[in-house]
Length: 149
Image (cartoon, rainbow, N blue to C red):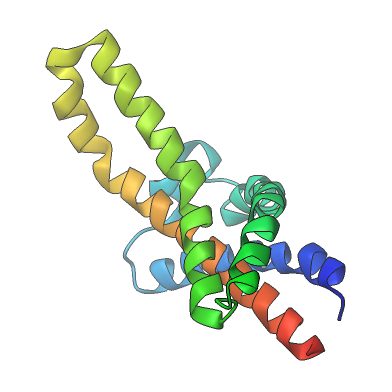
């Protein structure tokens, strides 16, 4: 399988990872999609996947040169690539959360901490979901590339 095909196929692991995460969390009655996205509760994880899949392709564009650099350094093993996927999957959510924190402290410093602490669990869940999607995409990419070798 060519590298280009792996780049095009691997981000499709994102909706599969989302389905698995949301299904397991709902099965274990930890959380429902309505707890995560009250606005999108009617559409469920499909609505989230509709936004996450294009984001996975954007992050893949960022990841490809980094993976090439890892491979040149002799670090193209599964663990290194999946760790990169974890970091890149979480990056958009961490960036968004940092923006929210900075905005809250800039506009109302006295009320920022209680308001941010109430949203901390939701922010952490989304970072974990992004990291899971990134890891799934990275694992799929590695699997497709290694099948070629």
